[in-house]
Length: 243
Image 1 (cartoon, rainbow, N blue to C red):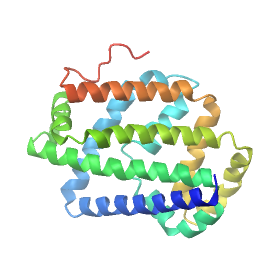
Image 2 (cartoon, rainbow, N blue to C red; image 1 turned 30 degrees about the vertical axis):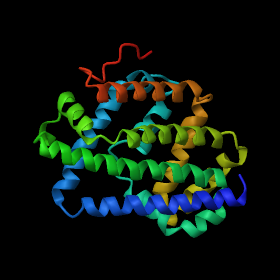
Image 3 (cartoon, rainbow, N blue to C red; image 1 turned 45 degrees about the vertical axis):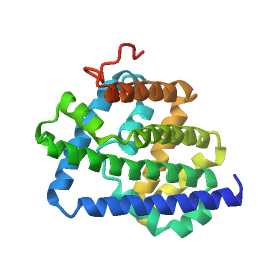
Image 4 (cartoon, rainbow, N blue to C red; image 1 turned 180 degrees about the vertical axis):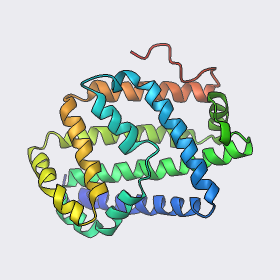
């Protein structure tokens, strides 16, 4: 990855940080927004845990599945991690390898897009007066009313790209040592969340080994669920074959 491509990912990182920050600021204007978004994300987290129970129960895939469900796409508030990245972006662009910058940029793009999609879902669920007692049916109806299919498909594509980027990092021998050395300094510098994201992802993918089957499983299941949701299929999360 050359200098120009590295600068491209720094620019992408800066842009998506701004988007995520703006969306979070809008959500904080009304205390109900934060509460409703937490309710939605908790429901989504439970759904993901059910869909990927087999991966979570697998000795090989557990850590990678847990990383996807908590550190990448889940109910966790990523604002502190994003604030850390924004604060040290000039230093980050000078010291972090290009592959690491790309990984962080993709993850924050997922974050910004998830903020946008969750805000739209909360608005639809409120209109239906369904936010307080979410069900599979009310979630699916709100999902369809939101539209945004292109954004949903992009979200799935980006999640796969983050996984591929993490897998690529595990093939760089110096990354592992660098993350270990950086742990204490990162904490002292107030960068614990950013470092934890990178280290957790690296460790999970390194332990798993070949990530092809894991990433293909997520891509296949989520694409099938997306199709069933937009088609209005009854019980959209009950996939006929999820082996």
